Image (cartoon, rainbow, N blue to C red; front, side, top):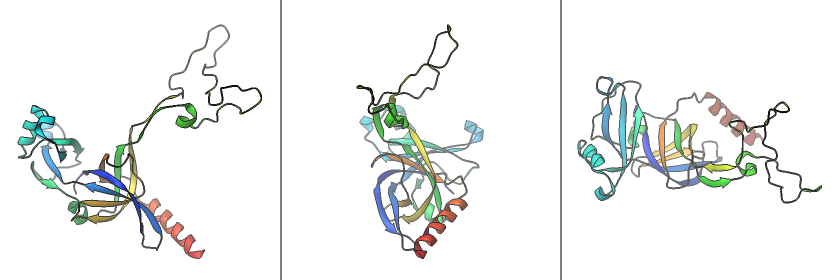
Length: 233
C-alpha cells in the first residue's frame, strides 16, 4: 500500500449512492506523482517516500531542486511532499504513482489534508462565534465588540490579558485534516478520485490523500441508519 498521493481539488458535485440517496462528493485530480527520493533508516534515520507533483519550468525553480529531481530522471516539481512509512516498500526513485494504486488495493476510506480558505482579518463574532453586545439599551457603535478582555486579578495588582485569549485576528489559511472520508470511485483513466463529503481549501488547492488512520465502523453505522430512516419515511 502506498502511503499517499498528492492532488488538486477540482470541485464538488453530487452522485446517487447505493441507497438511491444523493451524496455530496468532491472530485480530486490526483497524480501522477514521481518518486523523487526513497529514505531509509540506514541512510536517513527513518523510512519515508518523497513525491513530486506537477511540473514547473526550470527557470522558475532552483538549481538544488533541479539537481535533486535529475537524480530521479525527471524535471523539477512545483510541489514536493514527504510521506512517512511504517515499513520499507518495494519502490525506487523515478517510479510514477497514480490513482491506479488505490484501485489495486481496494481502498475504501481516506484522510485528506489541505490548507483552508483564507478569510483575512476577522472579528470575534465571525472568528469565534461571539454573540456581540446588546442591540439596544444604550449600546452605541459597539455591537460587534468583544467586551472586556482584562483577566480577573486581586485589587491593586493590576490586570493583564491571558495568553490564548480569543480575540480578533487572522482567520483561515491553516492546514486541516478531514479524517475517514469514504472513497466512492477511482477513475484511473482520468486520474480522478471521487470522495464523499467536503475537503479543505478552495478549488485548485493542493491536497494530500492518505489511507484512513481511524476505524470507519461508526461512520458506516451512521450512514446506514440515515438511509434506513429515509426509506421508512
